[in-house]
Amino acid sequence: MFGHNHYVPILRWKRAERIALRQLRDGDRRVITPLMELVPGNFGPNSKDLVPAPQNVLAKVATQVGKDWGASSIFVDLWLLSPMPRLPDGVHPLAFLAAEVRSLGLAMIPVTGLSRDAAYQRAVGTIALVDRRGVCLRIHPTEMSSPDFVTRVDRLLSDLGVRKDQVDFCLDCQDHIHAPAGLSNLESVIPTLNMWRTFIVASGAFPPDLQGFSIGQHLLPRADWLTWRRHVGARPRAARLPAYADYTIQCGHFAEPPERANFSASIRYAAPEDWVIMRGEGVFHDGSPGFSQWPANAQMLCGRPEFCGPNFSEGDRYIYEMAHQSVRTGGAETWLRAGINHHLTLVARQLASLPDCATDP
Image 1: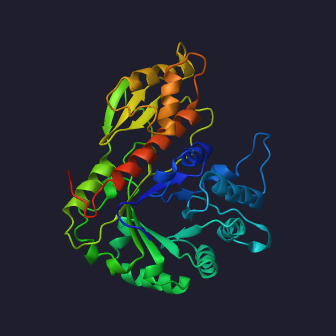
Image 2: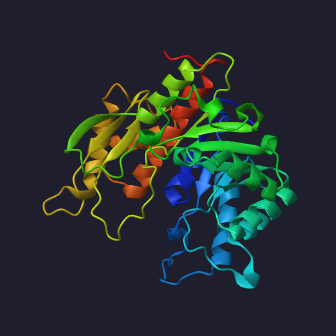
Image 3: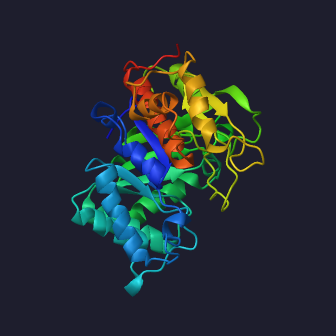
């Protein structure tokens, strides 16, 4: 399906992430296949405090996929939904979503893992049979240490009715701390590594929040990217190189933010080897400058050498324009959207520029 020059960002399906995808430029889209995670908040009350029917939520999600990503392939995972929403007639939510996506002529690839329940696995197998786009198998490193790991994988593929060459194998470490000590010995723990359709290694290095940073400007190493690049550069020339996946500028471990959170007016901005963090104070603190901190932080970011300029991406254009006006402030969603759009663009271009056999600069 694709090689190591491709990018698989793992995104929660919220408005900031959706619009960040929508605003990508065509050249960058071609080297990206998103992995979309639905979250419990997708099924929460709407602006009128009414809880929508799950089937209506899923139908809306399918329409959003078409609007915000288009007809290119997209991985979809519902593992964060617990308990799984119940639909009329016992239809599984993943199967319902796949049918809606299919009716729109879009290309959804279901994601599963070794610990999903039987109903989830049946839905994945049915989708694979109908759509013939294969599946994505998402594995955590701790699962590979089990003595029956290979047996469990083979049994699952048999139950799903798919071959290894129809499966995208995603080793998802969630955070870079759990990444294997090296990628050089993966052939010994991942069965028949060269037979899988795609091989992906995912991790995240961004913290859950910015409470550990004082107000001001900081650099945080992009340890997920640096670790992947180092390991790929150390791989034997004949070995299979993994595609890169990350959680952009968010933590790999998901948690819904608390209601009415006193979020800081901060900007998260990816540089080639670091994130620049423009840390503001809580917008609702007594005496806080509030939302006006965002344009002020944007002014300082635009003066830093890491800033790529307004023409680099839609996210950069937003940062630049907000820094050069005094009327609007933006909000948490728009600044997250700008940061994610910039991050997606930067990583896509970093990967597209790698040689066929990646080396560690």
